[in-house]
Length: 115
Length: 106
Image 1 (cartoon, helix red, strand yellow):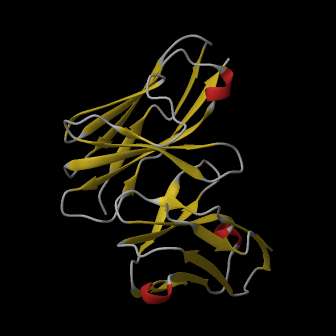
Image 2 (tube, rainbow over the protein chains, first blue to last red):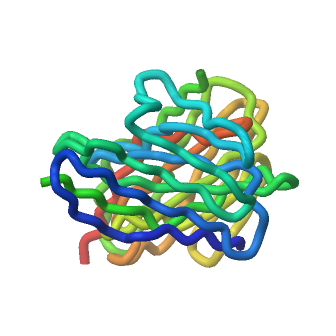
């Protein structure tokens, strides 16, 4: 299957700082990318959907000014958590899909800890 | 939006036993995927199965799209099968169920 790489795998940041997470499709062009968040012992919750070159569509309850998503190329999307707080600590996972695909491929996830 | 229900929420098996996990969904979809989440959080893609039946080793899955459910079969379970199994469905984005936590005892 297609490969999606997410970086970093884990990150610790201080409260009030911003952190950027990258999601890359390595062997296909990802016209659509998705960002999910998972709290301990819970399921994955969709945060936003982004199409290359367009503004992201955020799910209800997700603050677009706090979680900045950029999908400027067909192989890269970034999620920036701005002014992070301890309650933003979570596991963030991206997925990507090509134009002719319905199957989605997932990155390895990023564990964010805000101290 | 689409609702996804997985059952059972928890399952404890003795090594060697077989099991069936179920995923019900509330609307028509063109994508259904089964995942195993390992202890490090990584989602292992088991099946892409919007309809029909597929098999991969000891695992198989069946989706009956007209009746809006999918089944994941695990045969001769091993301790390494332990973890959380997620079903995710959708027509564009994927909506995840709450998962089935499987524990296989030696």
